[in-house]
Image (tube, rainbow, N blue to C red; front, side):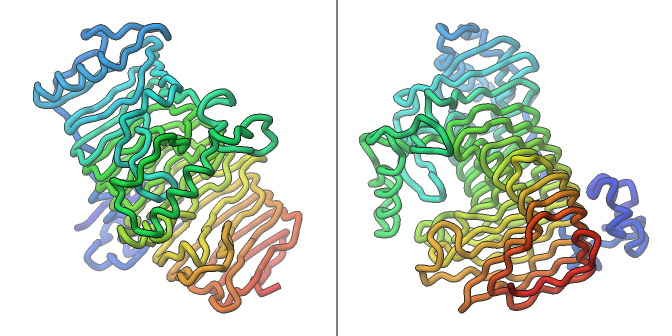
Length: 477
């Protein structure tokens, strides 16, 4: 298969010349059969496999079956009936037109494009009882029968959420978020009963004891639901929408294949407001998105502890391209629920910057979670302001108290440019399992305020690392 220069630029953006794509065997004659082991060949192969679903021309507005704007007008049943009618017609598009509509959870079916039109705001009532009966879901990487995600699809094929409208999750200091418990400097979240800790801790023990998922049910469940969760679906598209004030993680495809997330705007600053968390998925494209979040912007996951190892599905073949990361705990993150492993990640052409961006590139795990992390590639990333540029932490949360030590293999960071970082690196391996398998090339940080933290790093291939105008070498502190 040959591709021309125009196709190269479409994939790799204006930085193509920087990374030498145009001169790689002459981009005009790049042959994937010969280049399958190169960065360019592998990234392009992932893109070529990922094809967004298409839908029949048939479309129906939710107003045709009685949906009306306004808080007092519950559109839940009209949305459900509209989806059912479009399914009976062979599939197509369910339209939420301009206006402010209110609903409970939305469950998508196969061959349904749920379209939020420009000028539409779809509010989800922040009333937990509406999100029952419980569904098969995951919460922080552990399976259970839990509150329905706000938009949910289970074992469906060809599902989409599209449009230029707004999805409003209703998370706030009064609703959903207080279940987190004490958070930052908030004055809410101290309720001794309505606190996720009491459900979470029991759930995690159930998973360690390998209790069947059907029995992981709680009469009083205080685990906040994710906003959008397609679960075990094939051919998923999430495009164009703005997602605001999520109860929990915003976009969380789990065990899905062929996932496209593009041109979305994630704007949520509550606890655990991760932007996009593909979990144990295969073939994922995240492109041209904006993340302004209260937690990780993008976090790649594959299940937590015993549950992640039981399911045993890595998150693999992921292409992140041309995204913007603003505030958040991390820009492109691996973990922490990573027990199933991650392989074949390509993150490129991204821009990050905010006084509230804690980390740029981040890998977080520990010896309870473990995980084999292989072939992770970060290239052509620009960061304006960040607290820590590159973080690899084997001590995340529980530290070193387990028997599943993380394995890093073929981790590559190239062409990373940072204007201002409080700290360049925080690399913390174990004395018995130091960090290995990392390569850093062409990294420039114009201004750094504090010394890096380097603990138990065995070997890092490094070339042309410039910090504060001086060439440096990463060595154990």
